[in-house]
Amino acid sequence: MTTAGTAPLPRSPAAPLDVAAIRTDFPILATRVGGKPLVYLDNAATSQKPVVVIEAVRRFLAEENANVHRGVHYLSERATLAFDAVRDEARAFLNAPAAHEVIFVRGTTEAINLVAQSYGRSTLRPGDEILLTTMEHHSNIVPWQLVAGQTGAVVRAVPITDAGEVDLGAYRRMLGPKTRIVGIVHISNALGTINPVADMTRLAHEVGAIVLVDGAQAAPHLPIDVQALGCDFYACSGHKIFGPTGVGLLWGRAALLDAMPPWQGGGDMIHTVSFAGTTFAPLPAKFEAGTPAIAEVIGLGAALRYLKGVGFEAIGAWEQELLTRATERVREVPGVRLIGTARAKAGVLSFTLEGVHPHDLGTILDADGVAIRAGHHCAQPVMERFGVHATARASFAFYNTFDEIDMLVRGIHRAREVFA
Amino acid sequence: MTRDLDELYQSVILDHNKTPRNFHELPPPARHADGHNPLCGDRLTVWVDLDGDTVREVAFLGNGCAISTASASLMTAAVKGKSRAEAMALADEFQKLVTGRLEGDAERKALGKLQALAGVSEYPVRVKCASLAWHTLKAALAGAGEPISTE
Image 1: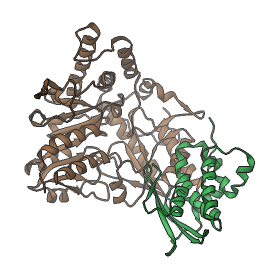
Image 2 (image 1 turned 120 degrees about the horizontal axis):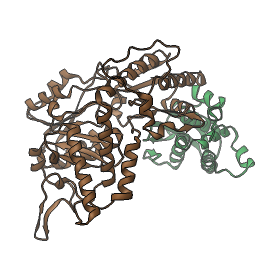
Image 3 (image 1 turned 60 degrees about the horizontal axis):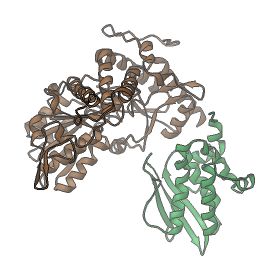
Image 4 (image 1 turned 30 degrees about the vertical axis):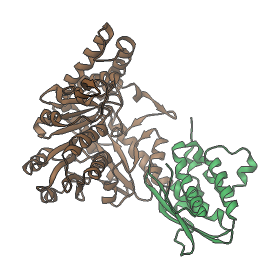
């Protein structure tokens, strides 16, 4: 990797990452866009897939495909074994106490909707409060608004500071005896802020509220430990952690999940069915109605093994170097305003460029093969908080390089020239 | 596929983005409609003041990318003085232009300065940026009160 023209940053002594080797694990990174190498900086939208994930899905479909938990035949047994094994791997990934507390869902959005419609709808009473932060993704706002409309509960939003951190003083003041549910994003997709989830959970528990953590952006960047966080529910998506789309994880405390009513009814989630009444299967099947995303779950298992092999210590160290470098280089460009300057941040760089709308910047960068996200990032309250309609967002994964950051910066300069 | 950025960001577009024409409100009885692109958050309002069947004044305000702002600005200049039916027809021709469905050179030339937005047809995700103002104009001409959306 060349870093021509700039002083090399000190390498992290604990965690050297062979980025060049890692990049060969991801076939799509060799893509050329209009003759130029792809620079993929839209990892917060979705991550790319290592060949082991692609191959696991292919192999399952080619050699082991059958429905799970149904047949007694050879293929069904193979498929069921492979599928169930991933639940154990997901348990380890989240450091959950037990595998049956891990529910396979379609993604973070579905996980939150499940908790809102099952736990929320069965427990919320008129006047109860659901406390969220202003930096939540729409997927951790709208499900709560829906259940609030159904139950008479009230959704409140904790303000954030100019740096894009939760105002913890306001959070303490807004917590109270009416607070039943607290929803916190672990890492903000629009700002990159890493929230102090363990502390916020402790405070919520003091008033008797339960805490759901939206881990969609955290799972690719941090080692997740639901027991250390102390939360009650944790949700994340497979496609953001280098696995397939269409699969995600919901972890919940067994005591809560056991007491919750089923959300969707169908096959696989029942014990016995008759027209006189139906009894439900124990966890996790109770919340997994219908044929699951089997091939995708298998792919997710491969992704979790891959991540374990790379190691979050190495990933975290390299991504911090990328973020530091990108922040320094981008903030030097005249007219750039960084949106989200929290002290604890993950690899997300959200910014505006004076005189250039983020969409135009996105198109100009794309002409150089640089893929970023432009828009409101499904976090319109964040945009409103910072008085912008949209931002440009570069988001990093451990396969990104300093050269790619240089390409990003070059593109931003080019956009300034076009719109000069 | 090679796409030329200069084709998209022509000087006419950059000019209308920087100094949009007719960028203000119109007082009543001018009618207006709100346009919204939920995908990107772009919003604009288009006002039309009709003299009988003729568009006497047209103006807009809003926040959007260069393509959406320039498109709205060029639109206001293009439809001023036209009849309601002519403005509606022009909206349809413009939609053909930005989606690459215009048949011949004559049709294209009939669009005058609006041709500057032809480059958008090479960028399918940006078509909505260019169309928003025109959809909103049609809503204003139809007198619909509901905000219109590109989705």
